[in-house]
Image: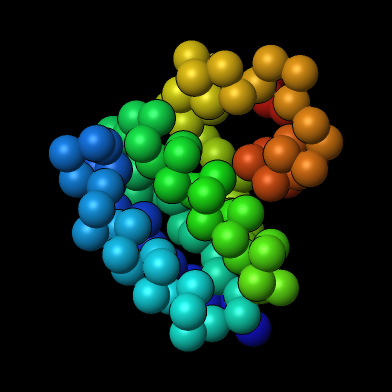
Length: 103
């Protein structure tokens, strides 16, 4: 069973470090992590970079990092602005959206 990690409401450059430390700690202790993004109201590219790096590290270590639910509209807009949705690989589409891209 995956360990649920609640992502804070604000994950920006100014506030990402505590969440990064929590995520790293959870990845050390657990084989599977599920991120709950429901509370996220303010995020920037540092959040996306952290999640991508954690996902790659988890894969490298033979662990799993996934999202509890597909990203909501605000995070979809952030992914779009940051260029993550341009020619998105199917694995990334599955990770962020659990399948189909939103319309």
